Image 1 (cartoon, rainbow, N blue to C red):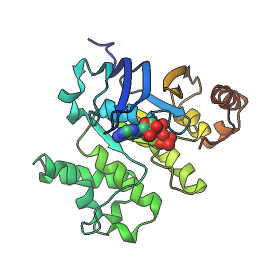
Image 2: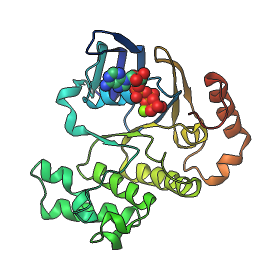
Image 3: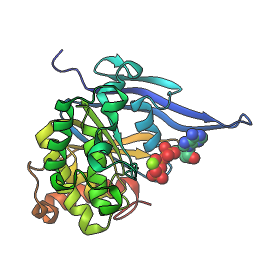
Length: 259
Ligand SMILES: Nc1ncnc2c1ncn2[C@@H]1O[C@H](COP(=O)(O)OP(=O)(O)OP(=O)(O)O)[C@@H](O)[C@H]1O
Ligand SMILES: [Mg+2]
């Protein structure tokens, strides 16, 4: 079916239960879809359940209510279509950068010469073609995060889940990573779910911004961002951009970054 969403989250709820039997309801009645090739940003207060939501979609955690489907299939059957990028790049220090990128292919026993060439192509795409044989300690934080993004893309996943991938970077590096991510997304045509604490980042990158309210986490708004593609730095200074940022801020009740 052409119009089938890539990710479909229906009435999803999550209640964690501690060892002493205490229940913590973290998500309740969450509904949203992600279409093929769409870039969806997720924002919400700390503790509202964003990471939990990504973990459910990736199959790392099982939701206690509702249903999640990836291309019409149960998430457990769809794991190979999904890759995740975390706040910290978590590269193995004893492997060079290309070998770090190739890790998912080795796990899948699919590390062929061809896939290695693709790994190199990806490093080229993020401007690190000449760093393939270097080690992570020889790279800056932004460069390491780019290697982690290549590692996520090397298995050709249809969906990229990103959990505050640029949260540890300084503002300038973060801006250039935003530009880079938009370019990678346009070139690789992946569907992206992107969690961030920065509302301007969410608006600038997203086709939509999904706002998660807290206690328990639920979707309180799903805003279509009608700004042109490709977006440039200048779009950050437009009135339309400022209006979207203000709209999301007022929904969350904060200004600027959420902590
Ligand atoms: N494995 C777990 N067991 C029990 N409770 C958990 C577990 N993981 C998360 N929680 C609780 O679920 C709630 C939501 O956590 P989650 O990490 O999903 O929030 P978040 O929106 O990603 O927050 P942040 O913006 O700080 O990253 C928190 O109250 C947290 O303590
Ligand atoms: Mg989180």
